[in-house]
Every structure is written in structure tokens, then in C-alpha cells.
Image 1 (cartoon, rainbow, N blue to C red):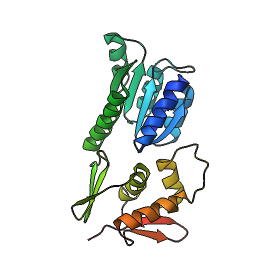
Image 2 (cartoon, rainbow, N blue to C red):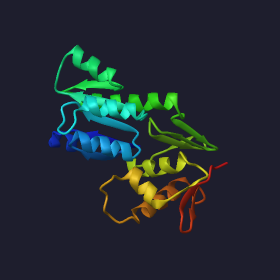
Image 3 (tube, rainbow, N blue to C red):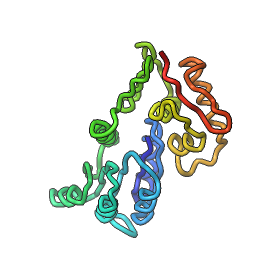
Length: 221
């Protein structure tokens, strides 16, 4: 899943990005409200971590503008303020949850997972049953023929992108965009490395290469 962090405290933003990346998310970071609004409007995200006190445009206005445009992405608001009126204003503008600084990183991750789980309950199921393959996109666990198989965070993220579009072709650039991040400038062939690793763990026939187009996940029987 792809997350956007809009936070002007650069050390905090980079620390959160590093931790959430280790959890298996693709994370983009911006430090300005206007840039955050632009990025969220132009690219699909699964969740936004949004600070309230931002240069350019504050978090209340960013959240309000996204909701006015019909963007229902889950928003977790962060603020150094502490008071029920601040929380009420954040929720009134359309935020889904609220966290006051300083906060525990463990709590933030739990809130992120809860929001993603809630989104799955209201939309597509967070558990994908694809024949003998079962992918839990919230717990980040998979099982093949009832046997759980251990994947690295990046292996799971690549598989998730293929699983949510099982039967369809997913291009290499699409996988790079959602599994790595907006600023990734490494070798695009890294996708092939992870696909090969998945084939070793799940069977060679699970992921088909569609020459010149990308990869397609075939639901195992």
C-alpha cells in the first residue's frame, strides 16, 4: 500500500517514512501543505498522514479541499496542539483519526493499520482468496494450500500489487510506483528480482510474464 506523509518537521517525517517503509509500505514525503494537496490530488494513495501546522496551507484546509473534491482517502491528522476543540475541528473537516504529538510510533502504526482495515471493510475485502492462495493485505500474511509462507516486506508488497488485480497484467512501472516510492531512481529490473523470489517460494507457474507488458498472477487451483 502507498502512503503519503505531509509533515514539515523533516526529522520526524523521515523517521516515520523509514519506519513505515520497513513495515512494507511505499512512502512519499512532502513538507508543505500545498505540495501535499497537489500530490494527493494527482496520485492515488491508500492513506495520508497529515500534520495540521504546515507552511503553504494548513492541514485543516488540505483535508477540507480533498474531501470537497470527493477524495475519500483515509487521513490520520498529527498536531502538536492538545485539546478537544482542535480534535473536533480536524474531524469536522473530514479527517478519519487524530494523533497528538508527542506520540508512540507503535501507536501510529496501529492507527494506520486500523484505518486501512476499516477502509477494507467498507470497500474491497482486505483478505484476497485466490484459489489455493490467500492474501491478507492488513495482517500482511499469505498462505498457499493452507500453509503460511514467510515473505519479506518487499516480496509481500509486490505480490499484493499482483493479487489485487489477479488475472490482469500489471506493468513494471506500476509495481515500482506502488511498492517503492515516488523518488525511486534505482534499477527498474529490481522488480524481476522480487518476482523471481516469489516464484521460488510460491511456484514457478503462479506469476506469468507477459512479454513487453508486465506480469499476471494466475490463481492457483
